[in-house]
Length: 420
Image (cartoon, rainbow, N blue to C red; front, top):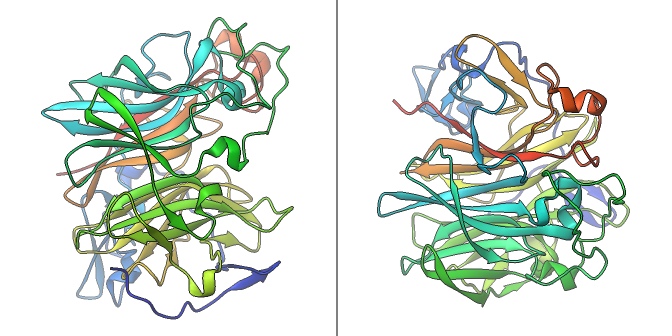
Protein backbone atom coordinates (compact mmCIF):
# COMPACT_ATOMS: atom_id res chain seq x y z
CA UNK A 1 0.00 0.00 0.00
CA UNK A 2 1.01 3.59 -0.47
CA UNK A 3 3.06 4.91 2.41
CA UNK A 4 2.13 8.15 4.15
CA UNK A 5 4.41 11.08 4.74
CA UNK A 6 4.06 14.85 4.98
CA UNK A 7 3.43 16.84 1.83
CA UNK A 8 5.77 19.77 1.69
CA UNK A 9 4.22 22.78 -0.08
CA UNK A 10 0.57 23.70 -0.40
CA UNK A 11 -1.31 26.65 -1.71
CA UNK A 12 -4.49 27.02 0.31
CA UNK A 13 -7.37 28.13 -1.91
CA UNK A 14 -10.91 28.34 -0.53
CA UNK A 15 -10.34 25.61 2.04
CA UNK A 16 -8.91 23.14 -0.48
CA UNK A 17 -5.26 22.21 -0.67
CA UNK A 18 -3.43 22.39 -3.94
CA UNK A 19 0.18 21.62 -4.62
CA UNK A 20 1.94 24.80 -5.70
CA UNK A 21 4.64 24.46 -8.32
CA UNK A 22 6.27 26.67 -10.85
CA UNK A 23 5.89 25.54 -14.44
CA UNK A 24 8.57 26.12 -16.99
CA UNK A 25 7.94 25.92 -20.70
CA UNK A 26 10.04 23.26 -22.39
CA UNK A 27 11.89 23.90 -25.60
CA UNK A 28 9.75 22.06 -28.13
CA UNK A 29 11.58 22.72 -31.37
CA UNK A 30 13.36 19.35 -31.36
CA UNK A 31 11.02 16.34 -31.69
CA UNK A 32 11.33 13.63 -29.03
CA UNK A 33 13.11 11.04 -31.19
CA UNK A 34 15.97 13.49 -31.92
CA UNK A 35 16.64 14.55 -28.33
CA UNK A 36 19.56 13.32 -26.21
CA UNK A 37 18.82 10.08 -24.36
CA UNK A 38 19.67 11.16 -20.82
CA UNK A 39 22.99 12.48 -19.60
CA UNK A 40 21.66 15.25 -17.37
CA UNK A 41 23.14 15.83 -13.92
CA UNK A 42 21.48 13.97 -11.06
CA UNK A 43 21.83 13.00 -7.43
CA UNK A 44 18.95 10.50 -7.19
CA UNK A 45 16.39 8.97 -9.51
CA UNK A 46 14.02 11.81 -8.66
CA UNK A 47 16.26 14.10 -10.71
CA UNK A 48 15.51 11.76 -13.61
CA UNK A 49 11.75 11.98 -12.91
CA UNK A 50 11.72 8.28 -11.90
CA UNK A 51 11.87 7.55 -15.64
CA UNK A 52 15.40 6.25 -15.38
CA UNK A 53 18.20 5.81 -12.87
CA UNK A 54 21.02 8.02 -11.69
CA UNK A 55 24.39 6.45 -12.51
CA UNK A 56 27.68 8.23 -11.91
CA UNK A 57 25.72 11.46 -11.35
CA UNK A 58 24.10 11.26 -14.79
CA UNK A 59 20.57 10.24 -15.80
CA UNK A 60 20.22 6.97 -17.70
CA UNK A 61 16.72 6.91 -19.19
CA UNK A 62 14.37 3.99 -19.51
CA UNK A 63 13.49 3.09 -23.10
CA UNK A 64 10.22 5.03 -23.10
CA UNK A 65 11.78 8.33 -22.01
CA UNK A 66 14.28 10.77 -23.43
CA UNK A 67 15.89 14.21 -23.05
CA UNK A 68 18.60 15.10 -20.53
CA UNK A 69 16.47 14.47 -17.42
CA UNK A 70 14.29 11.68 -18.88
CA UNK A 71 11.21 13.91 -18.76
CA UNK A 72 9.94 13.63 -22.36
CA UNK A 73 8.14 10.59 -23.80
CA UNK A 74 10.27 9.04 -26.53
CA UNK A 75 7.49 9.18 -29.12
CA UNK A 76 8.38 7.77 -32.52
CA UNK A 77 7.50 9.68 -35.70
CA UNK A 78 4.53 8.52 -37.73
CA UNK A 79 4.33 8.21 -41.49
CA UNK A 80 3.65 11.54 -43.25
CA UNK A 81 0.03 12.69 -43.32
CA UNK A 82 -2.47 14.31 -40.99
CA UNK A 83 -4.47 11.12 -40.51
CA UNK A 84 -1.57 8.74 -39.86
CA UNK A 85 -1.86 7.48 -36.32
CA UNK A 86 -5.65 7.52 -36.54
CA UNK A 87 -6.78 4.34 -34.76
CA UNK A 88 -10.51 4.99 -34.54
CA UNK A 89 -12.94 5.52 -36.18
CA UNK A 90 -12.30 3.77 -39.49
CA UNK A 91 -14.99 5.80 -41.27
CA UNK A 92 -14.75 9.56 -42.02
CA UNK A 93 -18.28 10.35 -40.76
CA UNK A 94 -17.78 9.49 -37.07
CA UNK A 95 -15.94 11.24 -34.24
CA UNK A 96 -14.26 9.69 -31.22
CA UNK A 97 -12.38 11.28 -28.34
CA UNK A 98 -9.90 8.94 -26.72
CA UNK A 99 -9.82 5.51 -25.20
CA UNK A 100 -7.36 2.73 -24.52
CA UNK A 101 -6.76 -0.90 -25.39
CA UNK A 102 -6.14 -4.12 -23.50
CA UNK A 103 -4.59 -7.25 -25.00
CA UNK A 104 -6.57 -10.49 -24.70
CA UNK A 105 -5.43 -13.69 -26.44
CA UNK A 106 -3.32 -11.84 -28.99
CA UNK A 107 -6.02 -9.34 -30.01
CA UNK A 108 -6.27 -5.71 -28.98
CA UNK A 109 -9.59 -4.51 -27.63
CA UNK A 110 -10.15 -0.77 -27.54
CA UNK A 111 -12.86 0.88 -25.47
CA UNK A 112 -13.39 4.34 -26.85
CA UNK A 113 -15.61 7.39 -26.44
CA UNK A 114 -17.64 7.74 -29.64
CA UNK A 115 -20.01 10.56 -30.52
CA UNK A 116 -23.26 8.78 -31.42
CA UNK A 117 -25.52 9.86 -34.26
CA UNK A 118 -22.50 10.83 -36.42
CA UNK A 119 -22.03 14.01 -34.41
CA UNK A 120 -18.80 15.81 -33.53
CA UNK A 121 -17.17 16.55 -30.22
CA UNK A 122 -19.32 19.63 -29.68
CA UNK A 123 -22.16 17.20 -28.93
CA UNK A 124 -20.24 15.10 -26.42
CA UNK A 125 -22.46 15.90 -23.45
CA UNK A 126 -25.44 14.90 -25.57
CA UNK A 127 -24.25 11.92 -27.61
CA UNK A 128 -21.09 10.35 -26.16
CA UNK A 129 -21.23 6.57 -25.78
CA UNK A 130 -18.64 3.85 -25.16
CA UNK A 131 -17.79 1.60 -28.09
CA UNK A 132 -15.81 -1.65 -28.18
CA UNK A 133 -13.49 -2.00 -31.19
CA UNK A 134 -10.95 -4.69 -32.14
CA UNK A 135 -7.65 -4.84 -34.02
CA UNK A 136 -4.83 -7.31 -34.58
CA UNK A 137 -2.35 -4.45 -34.09
CA UNK A 138 -2.19 -2.13 -31.13
CA UNK A 139 -1.77 0.82 -33.50
CA UNK A 140 -5.03 -0.12 -35.23
CA UNK A 141 -7.09 0.60 -37.18
CA UNK A 142 -9.84 -0.73 -34.91
CA UNK A 143 -13.08 -2.25 -36.24
CA UNK A 144 -16.17 -1.20 -34.28
CA UNK A 145 -18.13 -3.85 -32.42
CA UNK A 146 -20.87 -3.56 -29.80
CA UNK A 147 -21.89 -0.56 -27.73
CA UNK A 148 -20.66 -1.13 -24.18
CA UNK A 149 -22.73 1.69 -22.71
CA UNK A 150 -25.08 4.09 -24.55
CA UNK A 151 -25.12 7.84 -24.06
CA UNK A 152 -24.40 9.42 -21.81
CA UNK A 153 -21.06 7.68 -21.17
CA UNK A 154 -17.57 9.08 -21.67
CA UNK A 155 -13.85 8.74 -20.94
CA UNK A 156 -13.58 4.97 -21.15
CA UNK A 157 -10.56 3.28 -19.60
CA UNK A 158 -10.32 -0.50 -19.68
CA UNK A 159 -8.29 -2.67 -17.32
CA UNK A 160 -8.22 -6.39 -16.57
CA UNK A 161 -9.46 -7.17 -13.06
CA UNK A 162 -8.10 -9.70 -10.58
CA UNK A 163 -10.28 -12.44 -12.09
CA UNK A 164 -9.13 -11.80 -15.66
CA UNK A 165 -12.29 -9.97 -16.77
CA UNK A 166 -12.28 -6.76 -18.79
CA UNK A 167 -13.53 -3.87 -16.67
CA UNK A 168 -14.37 -0.58 -18.41
CA UNK A 169 -14.25 2.44 -16.11
CA UNK A 170 -16.02 5.58 -17.30
CA UNK A 171 -18.09 8.62 -16.37
CA UNK A 172 -21.80 8.73 -17.07
CA UNK A 173 -24.47 6.15 -16.36
CA UNK A 174 -25.69 5.16 -19.81
CA UNK A 175 -28.83 7.24 -19.45
CA UNK A 176 -29.77 10.36 -21.41
CA UNK A 177 -28.56 13.63 -19.99
CA UNK A 178 -31.80 15.48 -19.10
CA UNK A 179 -30.12 18.83 -19.74
CA UNK A 180 -28.47 17.80 -23.01
CA UNK A 181 -30.77 15.56 -25.07
CA UNK A 182 -29.46 13.31 -27.83
CA UNK A 183 -28.86 15.17 -31.13
CA UNK A 184 -30.24 13.47 -34.22
CA UNK A 185 -29.48 15.79 -37.16
CA UNK A 186 -25.74 15.14 -37.61
CA UNK A 187 -24.44 13.54 -40.80
CA UNK A 188 -20.66 13.73 -41.26
CA UNK A 189 -18.96 13.46 -37.88
CA UNK A 190 -19.46 17.13 -37.09
CA UNK A 191 -22.15 18.95 -35.16
CA UNK A 192 -24.51 21.33 -37.05
CA UNK A 193 -24.28 25.04 -36.41
CA UNK A 194 -27.83 24.98 -35.04
CA UNK A 195 -26.70 23.05 -31.97
CA UNK A 196 -25.78 25.18 -28.97
CA UNK A 197 -22.82 23.83 -27.01
CA UNK A 198 -23.79 22.94 -23.45
CA UNK A 199 -21.76 22.44 -20.30
CA UNK A 200 -24.35 20.55 -18.33
CA UNK A 201 -22.66 17.23 -17.70
CA UNK A 202 -20.85 17.80 -14.42
CA UNK A 203 -23.54 16.69 -12.04
CA UNK A 204 -23.87 13.58 -9.88
CA UNK A 205 -27.11 12.35 -11.48
CA UNK A 206 -25.39 12.08 -14.85
CA UNK A 207 -21.87 11.17 -13.75
CA UNK A 208 -23.35 8.06 -12.15
CA UNK A 209 -20.82 7.60 -9.37
CA UNK A 210 -18.15 4.98 -9.94
CA UNK A 211 -19.93 2.36 -12.01
CA UNK A 212 -17.80 -0.09 -13.98
CA UNK A 213 -18.87 -2.23 -16.94
CA UNK A 214 -17.53 -5.77 -16.50
CA UNK A 215 -17.43 -8.38 -19.25
CA UNK A 216 -16.79 -12.11 -18.94
CA UNK A 217 -15.28 -11.78 -22.42
CA UNK A 218 -13.89 -8.64 -24.08
CA UNK A 219 -17.21 -8.46 -25.97
CA UNK A 220 -19.40 -8.84 -22.91
CA UNK A 221 -22.09 -9.52 -21.95
CA UNK A 222 -21.68 -6.40 -19.84
CA UNK A 223 -22.67 -6.15 -16.20
CA UNK A 224 -22.67 -2.90 -14.24
CA UNK A 225 -20.80 -3.11 -10.95
CA UNK A 226 -20.77 -0.26 -8.43
CA UNK A 227 -17.45 0.68 -6.88
CA UNK A 228 -17.55 1.97 -3.30
CA UNK A 229 -15.44 4.99 -2.44
CA UNK A 230 -15.62 7.27 0.58
CA UNK A 231 -15.10 11.03 0.43
CA UNK A 232 -17.22 12.44 -2.42
CA UNK A 233 -15.68 10.16 -5.05
CA UNK A 234 -19.12 9.82 -6.64
CA UNK A 235 -18.83 13.25 -8.24
CA UNK A 236 -15.19 12.85 -9.24
CA UNK A 237 -14.37 12.78 -12.93
CA UNK A 238 -12.33 10.54 -15.25
CA UNK A 239 -11.18 7.76 -12.90
CA UNK A 240 -8.03 5.87 -13.84
CA UNK A 241 -7.40 2.59 -11.94
CA UNK A 242 -4.25 0.48 -11.71
CA UNK A 243 -3.36 -2.74 -9.93
CA UNK A 244 -0.27 -2.05 -7.86
CA UNK A 245 2.68 -4.38 -7.60
CA UNK A 246 1.53 -5.48 -4.12
CA UNK A 247 -1.90 -6.56 -5.38
CA UNK A 248 -3.91 -3.59 -4.08
CA UNK A 249 -5.51 -0.99 -6.34
CA UNK A 250 -5.14 2.76 -6.69
CA UNK A 251 -7.40 5.14 -8.62
CA UNK A 252 -6.49 8.63 -9.81
CA UNK A 253 -9.35 10.95 -10.68
CA UNK A 254 -9.91 14.55 -11.63
CA UNK A 255 -11.48 16.82 -9.05
CA UNK A 256 -12.46 20.44 -9.61
CA UNK A 257 -11.22 23.07 -7.17
CA UNK A 258 -13.31 25.45 -5.08
CA UNK A 259 -16.67 26.65 -6.38
CA UNK A 260 -16.07 29.16 -9.13
CA UNK A 261 -12.56 27.85 -9.79
CA UNK A 262 -11.57 26.59 -13.24
CA UNK A 263 -8.69 24.57 -11.81
CA UNK A 264 -8.66 20.80 -12.05
CA UNK A 265 -6.33 18.63 -10.02
CA UNK A 266 -5.69 14.94 -9.52
CA UNK A 267 -6.85 13.12 -6.41
CA UNK A 268 -5.98 9.55 -5.40
CA UNK A 269 -7.82 6.72 -3.67
CA UNK A 270 -6.65 3.24 -2.60
CA UNK A 271 -8.54 -0.03 -2.10
CA UNK A 272 -7.96 -3.73 -1.50
CA UNK A 273 -9.66 -4.77 -4.77
CA UNK A 274 -10.61 -3.05 -7.99
CA UNK A 275 -14.19 -2.82 -6.78
CA UNK A 276 -13.28 -1.14 -3.50
CA UNK A 277 -14.04 0.02 -1.02
CA UNK A 278 -11.67 2.88 -1.84
CA UNK A 279 -10.55 5.60 0.54
CA UNK A 280 -9.10 8.87 -0.63
CA UNK A 281 -5.43 9.47 0.00
CA UNK A 282 -5.20 12.69 1.99
CA UNK A 283 -5.17 14.03 5.53
CA UNK A 284 -8.49 14.73 7.26
CA UNK A 285 -10.57 14.03 4.15
CA UNK A 286 -9.13 17.03 2.33
CA UNK A 287 -9.35 17.06 -1.44
CA UNK A 288 -5.68 17.65 -2.12
CA UNK A 289 -4.98 17.89 -5.78
CA UNK A 290 -1.92 17.78 -8.00
CA UNK A 291 -1.24 20.23 -9.46
CA UNK A 292 -2.67 23.72 -9.55
CA UNK A 293 0.03 25.88 -11.08
CA UNK A 294 0.72 29.40 -9.87
CA UNK A 295 1.94 31.52 -11.55
CA UNK A 296 0.73 31.39 -14.27
CA UNK A 297 -2.56 29.70 -13.52
CA UNK A 298 -3.28 26.65 -15.57
CA UNK A 299 -4.83 23.31 -14.82
CA UNK A 300 -4.45 19.61 -15.47
CA UNK A 301 -7.15 16.98 -15.99
CA UNK A 302 -7.66 13.55 -17.60
CA UNK A 303 -5.28 11.58 -15.34
CA UNK A 304 -3.77 8.24 -16.33
CA UNK A 305 -2.11 6.32 -13.50
CA UNK A 306 0.53 3.60 -13.67
CA UNK A 307 3.32 2.02 -11.63
CA UNK A 308 6.73 1.48 -13.19
CA UNK A 309 9.00 -1.57 -13.04
CA UNK A 310 10.91 -0.16 -10.04
CA UNK A 311 7.73 0.54 -8.08
CA UNK A 312 7.51 4.29 -8.74
CA UNK A 313 4.10 5.90 -9.22
CA UNK A 314 3.21 8.11 -12.20
CA UNK A 315 0.25 10.16 -13.40
CA UNK A 316 0.05 11.60 -16.89
CA UNK A 317 -2.40 14.43 -17.54
CA UNK A 318 -3.62 16.76 -20.20
CA UNK A 319 -2.80 20.34 -19.15
CA UNK A 320 -4.00 23.64 -20.56
CA UNK A 321 -4.27 27.33 -19.78
CA UNK A 322 -1.04 29.33 -19.42
CA UNK A 323 0.79 26.02 -19.83
CA UNK A 324 -0.55 25.55 -23.35
CA UNK A 325 -2.30 22.39 -24.54
CA UNK A 326 0.06 19.53 -23.79
CA UNK A 327 0.94 16.77 -21.35
CA UNK A 328 1.71 16.90 -17.65
CA UNK A 329 3.62 14.37 -15.56
CA UNK A 330 3.42 13.70 -11.82
CA UNK A 331 5.70 11.18 -10.16
CA UNK A 332 6.15 9.73 -6.70
CA UNK A 333 8.46 7.17 -5.09
CA UNK A 334 5.79 6.04 -2.61
CA UNK A 335 2.34 7.09 -3.85
CA UNK A 336 2.04 9.91 -1.32
CA UNK A 337 4.79 12.48 -1.79
CA UNK A 338 4.38 13.72 -5.36
CA UNK A 339 6.51 15.85 -7.64
CA UNK A 340 5.54 17.79 -10.74
CA UNK A 341 7.70 17.78 -13.85
CA UNK A 342 8.44 21.23 -15.22
CA UNK A 343 8.65 19.77 -18.73
CA UNK A 344 5.69 18.62 -20.80
CA UNK A 345 6.16 14.91 -21.66
CA UNK A 346 4.32 15.44 -24.97
CA UNK A 347 2.65 18.25 -26.89
CA UNK A 348 0.14 18.70 -29.70
CA UNK A 349 2.70 18.34 -32.51
CA UNK A 350 3.16 14.91 -34.15
CA UNK A 351 6.48 14.40 -35.94
CA UNK A 352 6.62 12.43 -39.21
CA UNK A 353 9.30 10.17 -40.64
CA UNK A 354 10.08 12.56 -43.51
CA UNK A 355 11.05 15.37 -41.15
CA UNK A 356 7.73 17.20 -41.39
CA UNK A 357 5.11 17.43 -38.66
CA UNK A 358 1.44 18.14 -38.04
CA UNK A 359 0.62 20.79 -35.49
CA UNK A 360 -2.77 20.05 -33.96
CA UNK A 361 -4.76 22.62 -32.03
CA UNK A 362 -5.44 20.26 -29.15
CA UNK A 363 -4.34 16.88 -27.86
CA UNK A 364 -6.16 15.49 -24.86
CA UNK A 365 -7.36 12.36 -22.99
CA UNK A 366 -3.90 10.75 -22.69
CA UNK A 367 -3.78 7.07 -21.91
CA UNK A 368 -0.86 4.67 -22.17
CA UNK A 369 -0.45 1.03 -23.07
CA UNK A 370 1.94 -0.19 -20.39
CA UNK A 371 3.76 -3.51 -20.61
CA UNK A 372 5.80 -4.71 -17.60
CA UNK A 373 5.79 -1.20 -16.16
CA UNK A 374 7.03 0.46 -19.34
CA UNK A 375 4.85 2.64 -21.62
CA UNK A 376 4.80 1.45 -25.24
CA UNK A 377 2.02 3.51 -26.87
CA UNK A 378 0.28 6.83 -26.25
CA UNK A 379 -3.47 7.07 -26.93
CA UNK A 380 -4.95 10.58 -27.23
CA UNK A 381 -7.95 12.42 -28.62
CA UNK A 382 -7.00 14.75 -31.49
CA UNK A 383 -9.11 17.12 -33.62
CA UNK A 384 -8.70 16.61 -37.36
CA UNK A 385 -8.41 20.33 -38.11
CA UNK A 386 -4.85 21.51 -37.57
CA UNK A 387 -2.57 24.51 -37.96
CA UNK A 388 -0.20 23.69 -40.81
CA UNK A 389 -1.94 21.14 -43.07
CA UNK A 390 -5.56 22.31 -43.17
CA UNK A 391 -8.20 20.54 -45.21
CA UNK A 392 -10.25 22.65 -47.61
CA UNK A 393 -13.37 22.24 -45.51
CA UNK A 394 -11.68 23.58 -42.39
CA UNK A 395 -10.38 26.88 -43.71
CA UNK A 396 -12.97 28.83 -41.77
CA UNK A 397 -12.20 26.77 -38.64
CA UNK A 398 -8.70 28.23 -38.27
CA UNK A 399 -8.23 29.11 -34.61
CA UNK A 400 -11.69 27.85 -33.70
CA UNK A 401 -12.31 25.62 -30.70
CA UNK A 402 -12.35 21.91 -31.44
CA UNK A 403 -15.91 21.85 -30.06
CA UNK A 404 -17.12 24.52 -32.52
CA UNK A 405 -19.91 23.10 -34.71
CA UNK A 406 -18.73 22.10 -38.21
CA UNK A 407 -15.13 22.13 -36.90
CA UNK A 408 -15.45 19.34 -34.32
CA UNK A 409 -14.44 16.23 -36.28
CA UNK A 410 -12.13 14.36 -33.90
CA UNK A 411 -10.33 11.02 -33.73
CA UNK A 412 -8.58 8.67 -31.34
CA UNK A 413 -4.87 8.67 -32.17
CA UNK A 414 -2.19 6.12 -31.26
CA UNK A 415 1.53 6.89 -31.37
CA UNK A 416 4.28 4.35 -30.72
CA UNK A 417 6.88 4.90 -28.01
CA UNK A 418 10.49 3.72 -28.29
CA UNK A 419 10.89 0.31 -26.58
CA UNK A 420 14.21 -1.18 -27.69
